[in-house]
Image 1 (tube, one colour):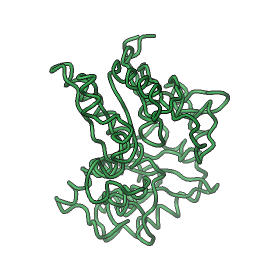
Image 2 (cartoon, helix red, strand yellow):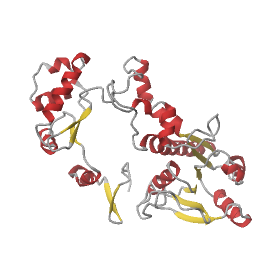
Image 3 (spheres, one colour):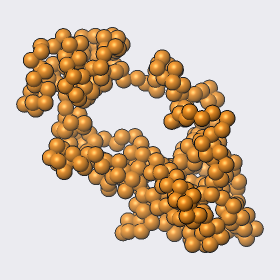
Length: 343
């Protein structure tokens, strides 16, 4: 099958986190990815199954001693014939290894040299170690996530590593490839997880600028669990439903489905009634099981859905029809997205 990135040649300098996940996604879309690993490297701290580990799936792996003259030359030759080089080291590491951007672009003027870091290539914190949680803390995003009565809640490592990291890195690579198609010249892509995660929160910053969001009050705003009709509720069987009818016409269907008094249609955005509405929703959803409520709202626009486990999600009829999940080595794995019409 012809995939959209067939023929694109990528060299990946082995690492952890957002850069290898970007290579996994690019390889899944058809790119020819070769991963250069250091000979005799120490075992990684997470012993993932190689059959389902996106850090190494779908690419060729070459082990080289980059400090050795012969292996160093081999790596240079591989990069010289590549479209894209992806690395996720701390600033200065590639330069010390003899693979500085100016050197590589001198050998291969059309090269897209993609660099993935937490804090960026320069700045007072550029050399600091960190992980997703640190980066989204520094971007201001972590402070927005959590309930009113508690501290900030880590949103897995999706916002920094994979949203602000991987996806922004891929956007930069594809943008640079398009620019190369116009100019014939490659360039350096400097992707930082602090900047990327901040960029993801642009709509929230817009809400702040418009006076619709109080950045000093976590868990008190429209999308951060402060709003009773944008939250999750426990059901009679100890499971949960997600409730999100933000628009009045959708909220009206929620009110009807729950059998609530129509007076709530006029109170939806009246914050003085939100605590009362939350208590009412909590009490009402506890009267039936998760799946019973899912059935009640199955053919409505009330924006009520069951909170599914990963296993349940893979077995849901909608996801089955959409082929949203695959089975890899007997394990559930998300399928590649988006879909493409060309086959």
